[in-house]
Amino acid sequence: MPVKPSLLVVADYPFVEVGGRFFAEVPWDERLARTFAPAFSRLLLLGRRRRADGVPPGWVLVDTAWFEVVESGDWNGPIGFLGNLPALIRAVRSVWPRVGAVYLKLFYLNSVAVWCYNRLQGPGSRKTVATLLVGDAAEAVLLRDDLLRFAWARRVASWVVAGTIRTIQRRVELPGFWARFLEEKFGTRPSASLIVIESWLRDEHVRVHERKAPRRPATVLFVGRLVQRKRAHHLLEAAGRLVRDGADLQLVLVGDGPERAGLEALAADLGLGHRARFAGWLGVLSPELLAVYDAADIFCLPSFAEGLPLVIVEAMGRGVAVVATAVSGTPEIVVHERTGLLVPRDDVNALTAAIGRYLADPSVWRGCVEGGYDMARRFTFETQRGRLADAIAGLVR
Image 1 (tube, rainbow, N blue to C red):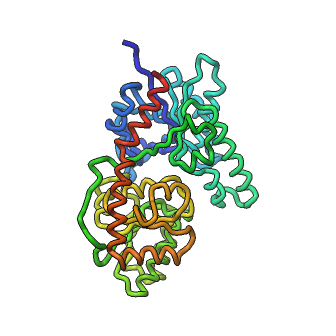
Image 2 (cartoon, rainbow, N blue to C red):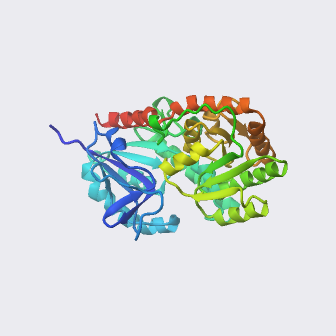
Image 3 (cartoon, rainbow, N blue to C red):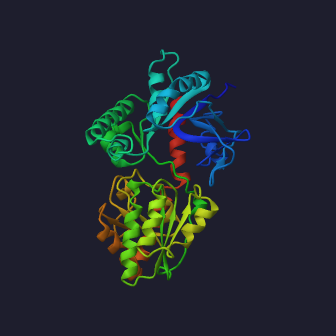
């Protein structure tokens, strides 16, 4: 029987080594590996490998029976990436003979480098490539004034990123997109594209409850990185207005990031100190995070830009009514007044009104909860991951 090849999975994800074992933010476990097992013997994980004294909160063990973390160095920022590039190329070269196909997450710098490496190989050494574009990196660059000070430089960088994405997607065997809007913006071969997400919400995670109205006090939940483009401060401002008008609610913000200290100060300034809890990062669908979803009544994601947010799918699967900004791929899962309420981005008045509408009208709240269950079942681990694995495995059959 011929030996099955390995699948090289490339992104910029960090893998932390503690005591000879590796930990990651997402669960690289047997259940995920088995979706690829019919075609691949192992999955080689190429990201950023770093060492630490302890396991970061919420991180989980990488199952080395199925996965192998490739020694490819560590880096931060574009300059750090360039400095680490020789180590990255050595790592790719060391595993290349075992690789049957390459799976690139876009838009990540490691993925761009590996795509270039593959293009430079001769006909006998070039690998079959599948991609998955998980967000609008060209738009995201426009928001990164922390990396590029001048607006003109960000516009040039956005143009370069968009062109790079289109070039890669045009020259791979399986171009994948996280959402339909990404395919429309960056796709070049619609008939050959795959629209799929890397969902972690499993069938057993979907929990139906019969509650007819939000609890009192109602809990409004945010889950995500505490960065400027997520606009968590707009949620705090909306909550402050509702509380001043007599609404009985409390806030839970799950996640961490550079904006946390400022958000905590803002909550205190708005008189929400005793009503707002900052829970930190709890992991991907950990028991702690699931408990937070179950205790919530309204999920709010007021982002300026997104891909197709998995946290919305997770909230829907636990029976939490959603309010979200009508950006990027969000309207593909949040259908206004059916699976949630959509508001324009950067519109605190509309955000306040949407949350208030759920609190005032239980029929709208319950209708969106019911619609959310139906949508969540379309985006579970089982329905999405199997399609992705089958499509990649089909490339090497």
